[in-house]
Length: 513
Image (cartoon, rainbow, N blue to C red):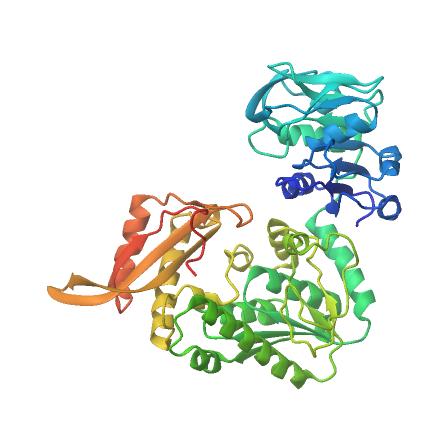
């Protein structure tokens, strides 16, 4: 935990990660901790403020999620959201009641904009509510600073504004002026320093990496994706040729992807990177395999075997680096702790073999994806690489439905490049979270040059998303779709029909396999 950052105590809300994002957007460091973190851990972290998240629990239930009482006495401002509000009110002697019906969705809120948290905000705003229980009596010497249109208490504050509770969710986009409310708490009330930016992050990490690695060697596997490339660039900036970047080309990367990654790191930044073409080995193991899970397992296990064999070429390596991001850490349940540890078994992110003993370095583990992109720009990586859409570990192996062959890989690479190039030409690429082509094992009849064809069906997919957990299909203009279809059919041998996937997640997934 960075000193003077914001600690977010998680009570199980689906919006907790959003709170962390909103704080980061104000150039203030935030980190998510479990609700039962000890007061000693908080004192060690020395936060500038604490935020209590929402959650599905009730303060009255037998298994209610309770906070260390000493935390509520800690001398920093505390903001409680939804369940966090109810917990504050209950803990300080207020009255919270269980209700048969709650508030869900949009609710009109009347706010006291003389209070700092509602400063420069209209006195009537729409807010997003999601609660059953509600505060019916506030603690002594506290005041109500907002009510919903049906007279439910919407926000409360103690006398000196060091403890504030909001029944609504300012972190969701449906709440008017939500960002401003959070900013008011962070800046006007908690006086948090707004110095969390890419430049300072890079400087801090360089010092940490130098101290951790010393004069030893480090190896990092790069895939051509944003995360591993940025991690490799950052580590190289810290320790130079002590770091060895290894790119294993499994033959299932996007067209020219391996080359562009090598050029960016080696020629662009002078990084020590080695490219190993293992495509023949991967493709031979995938021959005849159709089942998506079986293909994933083959690609994963072969990558491990290749990495293990290749890493031995570089002698005594003590450190392994990975491009792990903060969402990975959260979802793995490791919100508290140091940034390096020894791998002795199968690692939750990297999938490394049991007999590999490395000290793990994860310089990006405190960052969200958009923050990683900012660090990449700060390090001087080319924009087209930094802004690249997410790409699955198994690569095109999960975008070729059915059997994987050299020819089918080539077909998909060519079609995918045309699609992405056209999205860039039409200034759509940066508005899309992920876009790609899928080769479907269906052949259809077509007519080209007055002759009958019987060739492959190709599907195009483009979605918008925040973190990949949910996604909506992107409404590509008809003219762009028409251009992509025409160019693919006329230039990619073996494709005579193009369709567009308009399925959201859920019920579908982003990838097809």
